[in-house]
Image (cartoon, helix red, strand yellow):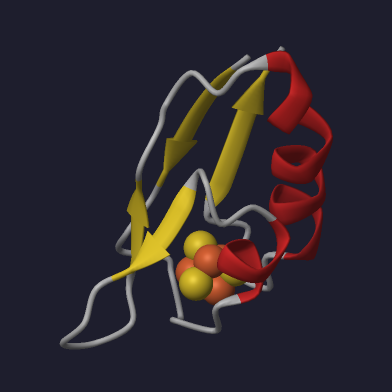
Amino acid sequence: MKVTIEQDKCVASGQCVTAAMEVFDQRDEDGIVVLLNAEPPADQAEDVRQAAAVCPALAIAVEE
Ligand code: SF4
């Protein structure tokens, strides 16, 4: 799985971090998403799919 984010779309809502905290974090200063791991292991894949699904800004793309 390959993950990409678009920081200019992110509205700092934080759902992605709640869904997959090993893969996503938020910048301290403004809450914009930070990608911790662009190629997460299989056991995190479902959490990452969930994060992409709940992102209100559609700022997370997942390539299987
Ligand atoms: S869920 Fe989407 S909008 Fe919210 S912090 Fe994560 S990437 Fe940004």
